[in-house]
Length: 416
Image 1 (spheres, one colour):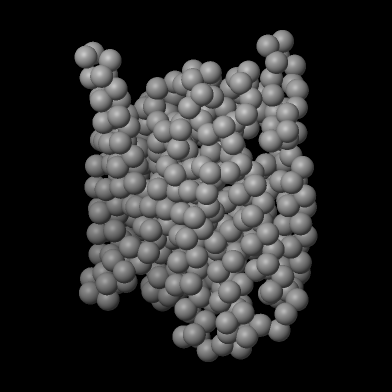
Image 2 (image 1 turned 90 degrees about the horizontal axis):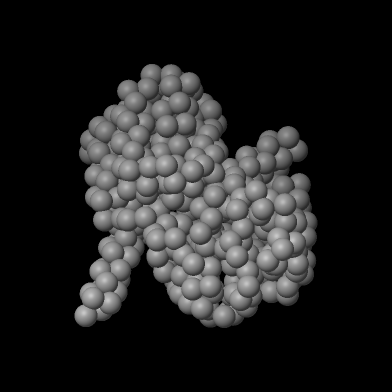
């Protein structure tokens, strides 16, 4: 009876943690509605939209930086405490944003503070939830990261309505308050995942994704010494570079390259949102049914199709929407599968740290693509570099092997 009761408590705790994680991710995903505010902030501060829009680039970089240290924060304070702190910091960042009267204050409040809060809560809650479900990592990643993507759609309507009825300042205050309540409520449902015994994890995991029975967890220091870590890092950076760049300038691509009117080109935002969410759900679930590295290869091929359409064809309206959908689908799927993929390569117990450092590619990829575009002008050079990197990444995903550690501590290699 005690064993049965213990298992019931275990299951209740992990499913509550999943619900709390989804609620938190819905709130954290709201930051992707930022483009709604550029116009009004530009008028309020008397700054060009390009300077105001840089706020989101700063937010993305700080999000990635905070994600990279989330593992250490969890070790010291626990997932619940860190997530509650993230909710409070997010609300403070939006409150300061509401009262910002210059662009530097905007960068600090919405860029740095909101970005740090979002990054600390995002990766920490995601990886903790995945650890609770070692037997269905892909599905749990899809649920969690899908909620993050869904949050941007949900808050697009919420913030749009608030802007029309409450004005800019009140919208930021209400947005921050609602997000804080959701994050804290979600945090109170969470508990830190128990440390997994490597052998037990191996038995529970899908054999397609973990075929080594003697592999133990890699610490971050051990992981970064493996060439596979940097191969995964380059693939991840490339996926983020292509996805974030195209998502950020999709409307401009439609108007400049396809000669669409502004209203039609703006429909790309809806197409991207649907494709992005579809990629998260479809590839996330698929990753529990086949080797995750092969799912990444599929995502790379889909992205290559999209980039090739933009680079090598005279796009019409249909081809334009298809190309951005391919890139968004690939990006959403890659972001979803990668946490579990990293745990396949380097173990589950240190996943937050191992994936956290690699997640810096999210911010670096976004900024690198923007820098290339601003230095060389136009889309052609940026598309060409991204396409070349995608080809390299596809070769890497097709040839990468699983790192293994023998009992003596020497690295061996095993086919994925």
